[in-house]
Length: 247
Image (cartoon, rainbow, N blue to C red; front, side):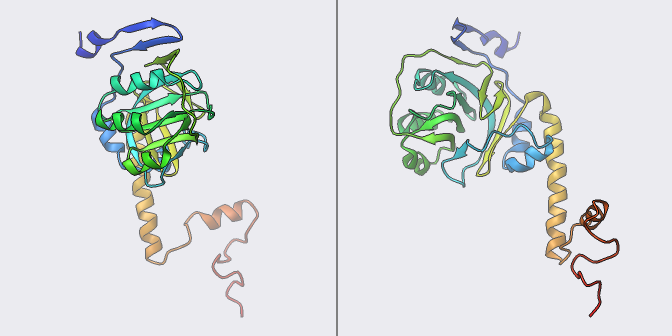
């Protein structure tokens, strides 16, 4: 029996429970996706698994990559948020399903400071934060649906370590969260090897295209043929010279 399996336990009852011993992805996969753009990773897995654009960073410079540590709370309550900060591991991204409710700021600077002290890599919250400027200044990467100064309660119920819905996506414990100023991409654990390979391939393609533009080769090699196929351009007519070379 693995150490992780030995620690796997569930406390409480459905709707108000905590599960420990959560699955963990291969650290090599996390390292391979760290620093990659959310857009590039999203392209690599079929331009899907992107949270809706209501989930936004507190600062465009924020970036994070790490395994999802999932939390579900009753709108306006943050009991399980506080518990999650103590139970999550270093490098985890706490993903909170607050039902999209932005009437209460259930993540503030105090819990952010605690999360940073615990080594938590970042937070994605389908709800509202408060103390937004202070959190951003402290440097913890945080994505949320909104900002509201009204504090929440600490009564529960809620769940930790079970699938949640955040930003329109189902997120499982151990999925990889890749987020930056553009938004949040979530890679299912089962798709991690393919995501790594696909991201590397996409990066090679984009690097080549950037180099071509730098050389003055601005027109994509596929564009003219695509326009001609759709009846939007004449075959043989240069795109950068609509007169066809005539004076």
